[in-house]
Amino acid sequence: MNKISRQWAHAAARTGAVVALSVSATLMAASAWAADAQAFNPRPADAETQTAVADYNAGNLTSALAEFRKAAQRGNRLAEFNYAMMLLNGEGGPANVDEGKKWLRKAADANMSHAQYVYGKMYDDGEFVSRDPAQAHQWFLKAAKQGHVQAELALANQFLDGRGTTRDNQQAFLWYKKAAEGGDMTAQYVTGSFYERGGDGVPQNLNVARAYYAAAAAQGDPAARLKYEQLSAQLRESHEAKPQ
Image (cartoon, rainbow, N blue to C red; front, side, top):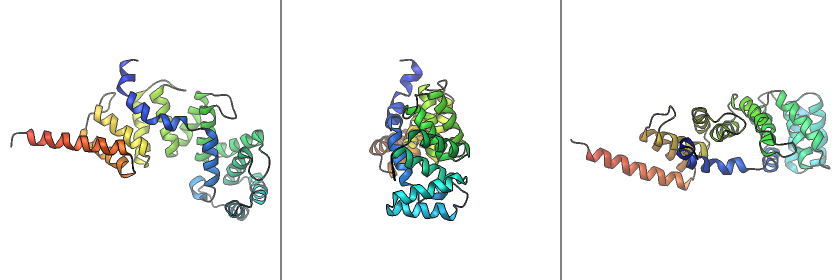
């Protein structure tokens, strides 16, 4: 393991659980989020899409599938996305992976950030498609540039690991920080680790590191709480040791 790898091994370990999430789990979660139209599509949903969302939430999956299909055929990208999710998960009818991938790609090409993220996740995990981290990287980048927090974290993981792109700790830090500012707990912890250690263009700053650990701790991360307490004690001792 080279020096850079050793330096950030702990940060990589923190992100491993995120990288390991299967696409199947991601797709199921995405379907469950169907009601939040604004999270996936800033354009107003048409009446049929809204009806489909209501039917989906009520458990009327066969009706929801048909309604999402009709709205998707008219170009509503939220409908394209949810229709794809239902096809891939086999909800409301038999699973149809080829059709699901086709409609997911349509939503991604329509610049829907969550569809871009999920499409990239398929290639990153190698589910429904051959694993292709470089292809995943391109889709994560598209979604991350729109502020999609999960895509920002996935992109940071790739830069840290050198998976699908050249290893670049400075780029990893940039995207971890963006995801941290977007409220992601793991990214907050890792950003704190970068500031605690310093290097790779990141100035060491224990006060800033402590603030990021505090943010992650506030979301329930026990390791972040421990790091916050350790840095608080270290900074307090440093302050007390200074001549008055």
